[in-house]
Length: 252
Image (tube, rainbow, N blue to C red; front, side, top):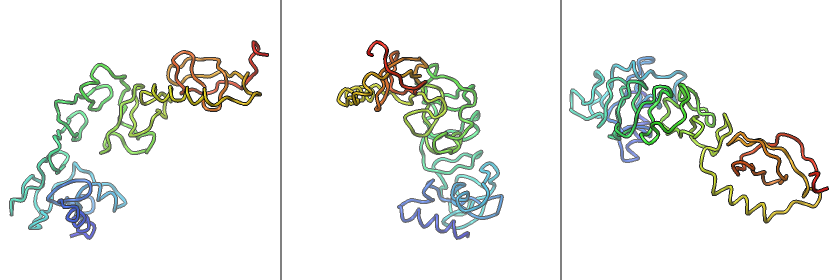
């Protein structure tokens, strides 16, 4: 048995579970690329200089009797259950998380299945409450997260669908189009109070600046403040300067 596989199994036992930190399972995958045994494809990829193709896995080894056999849900020798959930396409073994295999995505997703639908244009599974209520971007999941650079389509981390239609794992502003990722109204009101309590020095009090709002794409001319400039149209502080500061003519 590969040393890395034994180590993964030991970690699983220490955590009071079978398998590894990624999956709870009763078997090891025999990697078709290098013939080594690993608890899962992620453990393999973390230890090797190549990636394991989950779809090409043909054999597994039981962690109890160590018999190598065709990939299946139950050991043919000692009847050990390799996984409460098993997908014969992805060769995914795990505890039951209401998983389902999406033919359009080509991989397994965490369900329950009835809570999700597959958007053909976005080409990914979305929560039912987004059906007809999200902005479609063609093949939006077939890219890396712009924050952490991890592949979104196959990631085990849930990606958030932003109002702008883009996806990312975490963050308060989309780094692609700069739209706010969350409802920032409460924070904008707090910023109103902070600005009211933080007057600018006298030489800046009559300064104005042109701004572009990243949320509504509107342009405004507002009073300059170091803490932020609020859009006159949608009241967002997610703005950027569109020119230099100048003294307001009506206040000279």
